[in-house]
Image (cartoon, rainbow over all chains, first blue to last red; front, side, top):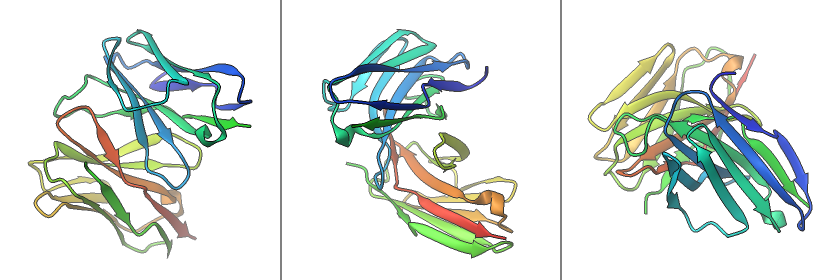
Length: 115
Length: 111
């Protein structure tokens, strides 16, 4: 596989469930990102990891818990979500954080529905 | 706080027409500006990236311009095709890792 992959592509969960989203990048990048895309809203940056260390956390509720075990994998653990958390969750990777010419490459996203 | 606005929110044109999408941003202290394409239910594909020192970038039928001092960028699409139908997103990058996105312009090119 090439580029950035995300699984699952679609997820429906109840408010009491625990689930995880997975992202994998095959580009040899050192930075990975989670974004949330809600209807009628711009993409919102949630978390940034550089070399497996979290470098940015944008006031995201604790019911979202990221994990980056290595530079190729990024997870988003979900628990006790709310219906308003339903959105498209996009993962991205880039060569490094903060580089002048850095371009982020996006995965196809996970469409999450919380019932 | 950086804010990015895209106009129009939606656009429908006949095939073959040339068109312009607009993006404006409030804080001119940016590293670069990027235009992305997003197909329904899919991720983002980078189209063009303009560094803050550049005025424009071209790729095929696409041309993006940047006027950093006025906080504006345009994406020009020449000879539009039905396959160009998608949502086009503008994003600016500040000194850190943050990309700030606009809400996008939903383009429909009718055969």
